[in-house]
Image (cartoon, rainbow, N blue to C red):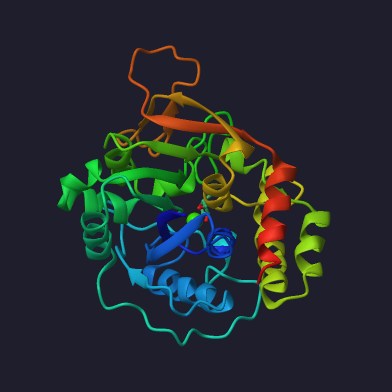
Amino acid sequence: SKKIIIDTDPGQDDAVAILLALASPEELEVLGITAVAGNVPLSLTERNARIICELAGRPDIKVFAGCDAPIARKLVTAEHVHGKTGLDGPELPAPTMPLQEQNAIDFIIDTLRREPPGSVTICALGPLTNLATALQRAPDLAERVAEIVLMGGAYFEVGNITPTAEFNIYVDPEAADIVFSSGIPLTVMPLDVTHKALVTKARNDAFRALGSPVGLAVADMTEFFERFDKEKYGSLGAPLHDPCVTAYLIRPELFEGRHINVEIETQSELTKGMTVADWWGVTDRAPNANFVGNLDAQGFFDLLTERLARF
Ligand code: BDR
Ligand code: CA
């Protein structure tokens, strides 16, 4: 199985992504979970990560806290989507498993230096502050990471936090710029694909019908955070943004992308955080990312439901 580090800002959809990974030990070995400030402040994202590990019956997973603010900007959060706790919806018990004492950045650096080069994949589900900080502090990491698979950006679907920017990239565009220009192999799940991973009523009923604490919690979470997308996009249900990342690592054949150049806008007030994706190859800038545009939505939900049923 693939060794992964999950860098995350839970977030209901982050929670589902983590559950999918923990349910898939044949494909994925979770070395640790690193929390970053994003949807809600760090004190809540690290807590939410521990709540999810306990929900999954995995208090043995190591959870680390990383950066509490973007590299060069004030933190922007998304309580308007995820609620005050970031995990609004289900009633889940307060976590009892400890937060690791080591800082997330040190954990990322130590792990990548300890494991054989090219053997650890990073799943990035929030703003890229932790990863960029680790790369700044330890440039040798770029040679050692197998791949970064991240949720962020948009091309045809433009933005969800500004007219042109997706939330994860917008919150820390300087960090995104560092990651996108690192030379590390990147697979990117932009809104173009995640908006196709919609939890319809029937799909949510299938989660609820699992009847387990995990099934019920996932159903309550997606019911909570679908409001935003229903109102803004008229979508049928909650888009499962972050689970696209972990599903891709389990079943890459469900996804379709193009290897293209993607640059991050960091200067313009109007378009900062935009992922300028050369989808049509109109520049001669070198490709740096597998930018995913499509998925087999039913295959994705079949996989997710089958895996959640394991809890
Ligand atoms: C991304 O932003 C967060 O609100 C979600 O968890 C996801 O990672 C979607 O734009
Ligand atoms: Ca997230």
